[in-house]
Length: 110
Length: 115
Image 1 (spheres, rainbow over the protein chains, first blue to last red):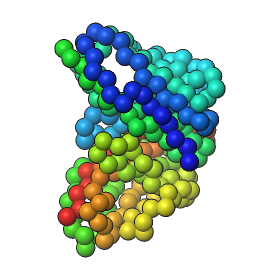
Image 2 (cartoon, rainbow over the protein chains, first blue to last red):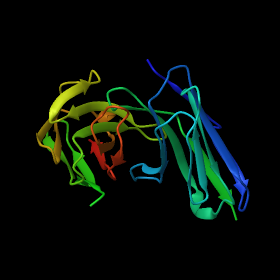
Image 3 (cartoon, each protein chain N blue to C red):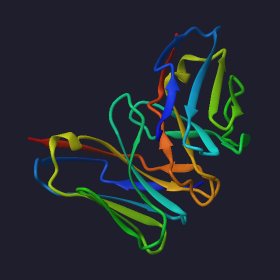
Image 4 (cartoon, rainbow over the protein chains, first blue to last red):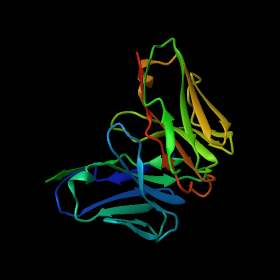
């Protein structure tokens, strides 16, 4: 089945630093979505990408849909303590189902 | 209204109980989903409903029974569950599922504990 490789698995950074994480797959996806999840809550959509090559920003967040449709990255600039959480990439399948990466746990030190 | 509402937020049930999880959205989405998430793991797809018809069942045991009574509601009926079924159950909805589910939104989840 389709699988996503998300890296890094965890990150420990200083407040103010930039963060970069990415997802790769051997399969092509129609969409790439990036979510943030806090403990005990559902994933919250950060950025959605629908076209190969698309580069989209949402405040301090920037994400790109790889031109091959097999990868995506998410950058967070000037991290702040509330950025702490687990970030998931998700690839959109042909029937609307999402395939999730294993997540990147972000810790921010004030 | 841009939310997916799930009730209850927490549920504790015995292995012989019958309970239901409920999910509601008013965004006009015609695809709705159930996911199961274990601690420190990503969500895993269970069921997909497209235009109120079941389109994907990811080989889920029959003790989980989904129902989509109308385009805004999705239920998950639970019966004779096992302790290993304890997890966060997430509902999501999106616009028609092809290509890739535009506007994919998750609810806050139901934390289920089976005792």
